[in-house]
Length: 405
Image 1 (cartoon, one colour):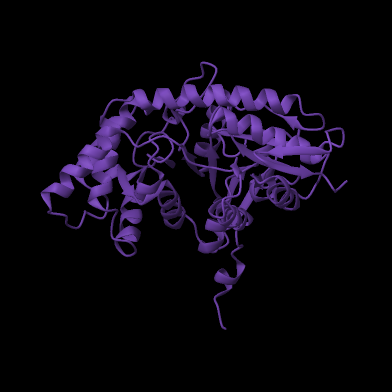
Image 2 (cartoon, helix red, strand yellow; image 1 turned 30 degrees about the vertical axis):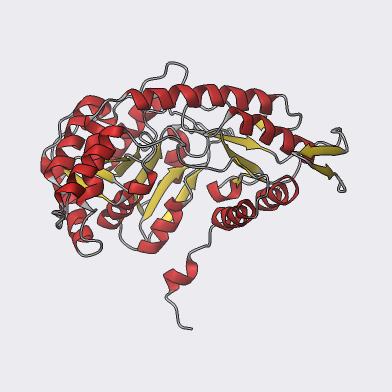
């Protein structure tokens, strides 16, 4: 079959394959523990549900403007003013079908084939594939010290005449690293000096621990006019447990938003007005649910981190935010897909292979679950990998016997 070059170049996600296998096992009644999840377990805010329900009860559901409804854009403007200390004009905001789509449309708006877009490693799995679909080139940037906190020097070494944009995801998926203000300030100044677009993927920006507070990228910018090359991407999925509603947004200069609006108009037209109403309800409503989620995640992080720190051979860095720990298991197995498959097969624990995020030998584990699942999940992993563990393990009524080295 004759398929496009871009279509043939896209990789199937090993994560999705593992999740599919996990779903089949769970449907069969297997005692599965899912430490690979990327969405909050709580319910969407009542303010979001009641606002969407009101629109449904009205029974008049029409096309949305291609850049979003007035209500949703007003909510994003207010949110941006509160957390980013700037008040964008309506023409500087677009509402999209999830933050992922906002990011993709932004990349389509600014990148040409052969252009390069840089992002620190480890990185979210879709950055490189999105660039590929545009004909651009994704360039991971690795910290010289092998850790999760790059320096400006690391970025500068990868910048070329083809570099058009840099993506910063902080706090980071999968590492949970929250880049310091000094680094963001340097990146903003560097991009302004070089005329490079800076895309801030801020989908986790309020899920911070240990007293850390979100700061605004605009605080470091010298340019606040319509020549600004800062693009902020955000959405309601992570903070408000609304992953299934698919609402995100971008804030940028008017020309970029105009192009993104044209792209959206010719593809999906616009997000459903119902989900935009729900998003506005969440953004304008009581915010105690976000604080509750953050406190729960911080406690869960502490439990998972302490268990992994006591796991001989596993190297782990304490996350600053998100709901992931990115741990180095290479002492046991350097092939992370092989290791993740092994753990699912032998002890029914789902994790995400680190190679998906650009770092082999690592596993991403989500603590966005129950304390019971965290402790039992790590116990199962340790039993499967540690040769000093007992030869037998009970999962419920089932006895497992380790018959591998």
